[in-house]
Image 1: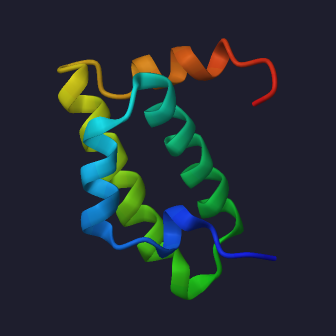
Image 2: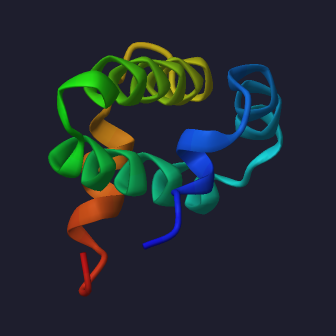
Length: 81
């Protein structure tokens, strides 16, 4: 199994990429990180949660005061997630 690039790229690069992503790309990233958190072993859990927090921050920046509601709405509209 190959390593998840979301988990192997430097955090600074991920943060920069998050800013440039479309909303769909951002929400897909959050979904992938959620899946990674479910599969993470003890040592990797903190790193996954940190990357999830970065992604949450970007969602909150785009949708002030809505917390993760836009992401949850998007996820409900995705038939394969």
